[in-house]
Image (cartoon, rainbow, N blue to C red; front, side, top):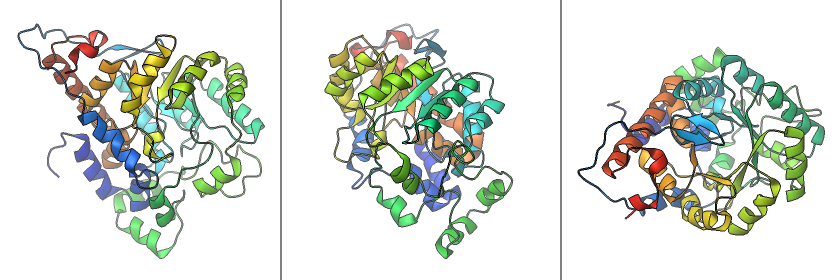
Length: 377
């Protein structure tokens, strides 16, 4: 492997090191994957203005997301099965994020539990919540996130039912993996991954096993989703969740102006313009295409963040120029994790920081907080 210079380099390396079913899980979208591709491609349509002979010294990418200081406007997205990209994946990614000065968001469907991540970090992380039919379990999850000192709750709105992800269905995805000849072969060809996995006891959904009652089968994300995710989730539910939580609340999965306006009544601290990485409604617009429309709809009444398709520091810069106060990366950090564990996550963050910094300077700006639409061509 040559020098790692881009997120694409990390992706290649991860593909060689992570068993196919888990690499594909991170790397796939729903149905035709049209929205997944649009998330990336639509960034390239946005052009920047090159400016010259401006002072480029003393640059800073530091800013704030929901009132928390961040070294750059990037957080790690909540991603399910992170601990299957690399043993103890969520714990390693959280440590890398903390050292880098950016927020880490733990998924409800993580392999390492809330308590696992809290045990290896000193700065509060964020927790992403899926709402289950079992309300006692949801209340318990919220209380556990509080007890762990989480500083924000990220409520996912766009996964009441699971989008159709063909790769996962073909691969027979599960955690821990099934022991069929196909799965055994996939793992046998990834010896380092197997060795690391053998050393950890964290191989199933850590937030759920031992916490949810009558969990019949947790190996399969889709069966648990079908059984437990609540298709009746409504705006009213946001109210009791906010009350129970009592802290900062971020709503994830807004992709429509009407929903953005409805979110204003919830008292949420931020909304994330997101289509779940192209993993839910295939045929929907990309996040970056909807970002300006949603910002027009809500003005400055709520902080607006975005995720989906970010593969470089330039992508972050473009989102900030359009008005996003923060962005989230999922696949880029997962590729880093799969490629090289905690070091790989740091590498992904460094790649994004460097690209953002150089591009910002060449657009004639020194501070990320001064970046606005004036840098767009």
